[in-house]
Image (tube, rainbow, N blue to C red; front, side, top):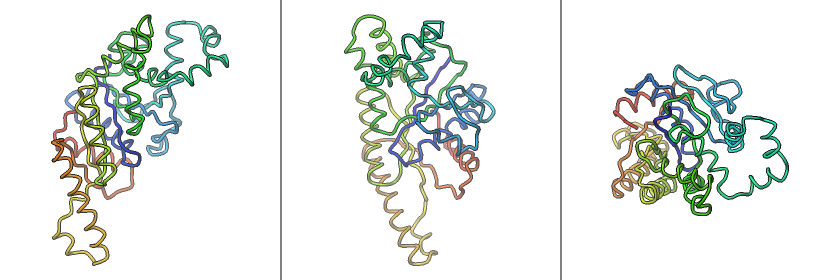
Length: 291
């Protein structure tokens, strides 16, 4: 049974997919429940992990990545199909009801239905509704900031629009579970830059006020340089690095002014994916992060 669902989000380009892999690796290697089975699920239309981790084709059906961690790529259509087949039992009936042109068009334009299909799968285990998943924790490489809020707001909106019947009942159940801090764990990745840090703070505050959830903030690619370090550099390089240091100070100050706890992740001097993931997972362990 799925005990925890970790959602990773952040402004595009901040490294949320990398940190999703880092978190999955950390949970499987260093977390106290290291015997847990982890599923790393990406919601990207085009798989990031397939090339980055040098894996065979990633699809809806999970494949193994490392010991204790499988990877899957979810789409709303696949989630809805799996759920419908679970209820109807017969694929012929599924095709009759869901794969005709009219039904496909309605599904695509129905507001919030795709988001509901994704969150329905995430929460299917604790709700005891839908196909079972043989994982203890889910790590979900989710949408970027704006779409992420739409994702989380969808169940309540659907429950408000359809208050009676199975759809209303399931929407309320999904909404209750994504608001449960024992089950839902949020992770916001940001950089020490003006726009990403502002967006991260706004998202953190919105999620806290609307859903009662306190997210983990990851300040990614921090150089950790000091003024004494700059003195050892050539003037033109020092000028560039000075701007980076000022941005890092700005980001830290903004988070502290907002009274938000955060985790600094260092800039790793490597382009090799496994090296990056292993070293950053070790950073989480050394910082005693307990997501």
